[in-house]
Length: 153
Image (cartoon, rainbow, N blue to C red):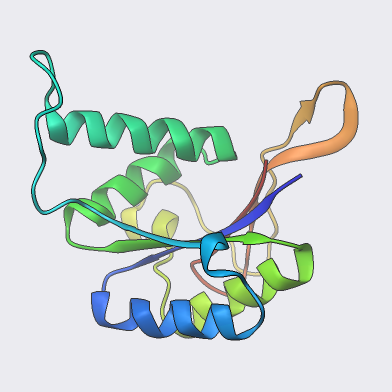
């Protein structure tokens, strides 16, 4: 199952450095992605409202990864305010290391920052859902060392 570290950054200038550091630990470029709110929303159809389409698509993808609704809302709000999301998908050890890199560079603690969920330091939280009657769990695990979140999907 894929595992992904996700970090929200307020400061766009650190994102390139974060990506470079993550790639330097062995992540292929295709497995490290960044996402900011588009500067220009192109209209894709008659019934299209580009900003809403973007946010709905992001909501859908993050939820599919296991993000709770409150976390997704915090990510979307962070992007609206000019933030950037960084995603790193890979093996367990590399994803943990990518999360540490994100935290070292100031990944935003979205739940605490937005006041949407209580944040308990040194606690690990899981939103686990069984996957096809398998003992393997999918969902979100909280990295207590900073703002990066880990998802298994």
